[in-house]
Image (cartoon, rainbow, N blue to C red; front, side, top):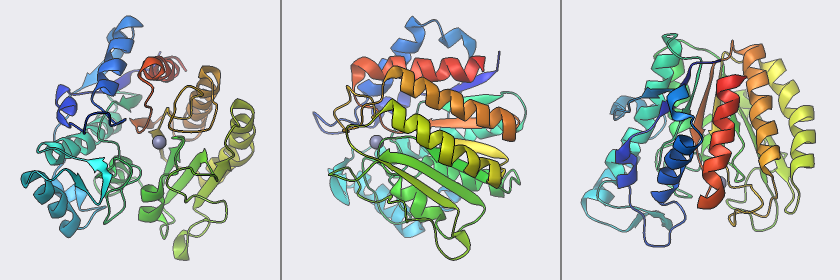
Length: 316
Ligand SMILES: [Zn+2]
């Protein structure tokens, strides 16, 4: 049994989006209730979150952008950059706490106190670009974690695997010229899928060419396509790259009952994804894996998908 860390903080509920917004605080309430019900809480190592030091946010985002988010919250504006990115007065502080939660999990991992971790944080991060809030995301939690691993813990090579059903345009943009962070995303595309990026010919540029790998999945497809693609493109790519740590953008919005996508993954399909990730971690990174919540909007199914994900992290 692994020592699996669990990052959660009640303050994550204080990022209040507008009524009816899919990225609502009830998502985390559902996850926590589901983990308690499944008897998993006592098997997890709780990790307390702290706000990230601004210097680590600056490792990814410009000061100008950071201040823009802070000012928008102070002024009581309803959103940043697009009406999707709903904010309240506390959003800036909670976004720092979300990134900071990931950094705390990394500290525990690198100190050898845990084997892997899941970070139940919000707001999510993978759509946030260097200078732009997008898709409910403000600070790119996983990208900040990658830079922290490199600059604070001296890790050279990191792979980020993003199985949220939407393309992590932010993470791709942040690392597209960088050969030290390999970015893999499997997501719905084409059709109307948000954000519209992540075509298979987007493979990074300059020094980063070949270090971004996008796997589009057609709407209506599900477990079989994921199984085939993950086995034939992700696994060999990670084997070639030889990362020292795996970071995961964990989105559960590709489930057939989640209205945010046209992809039809089942709970079994998600279990396969989790098992494949843990296989890779056990084989290439000494088990070091930090998984960070991104999407997942059907409150009836989200908690059981997260519970299944955590079972694999604990047991495998
Ligand atoms: Zn998503």
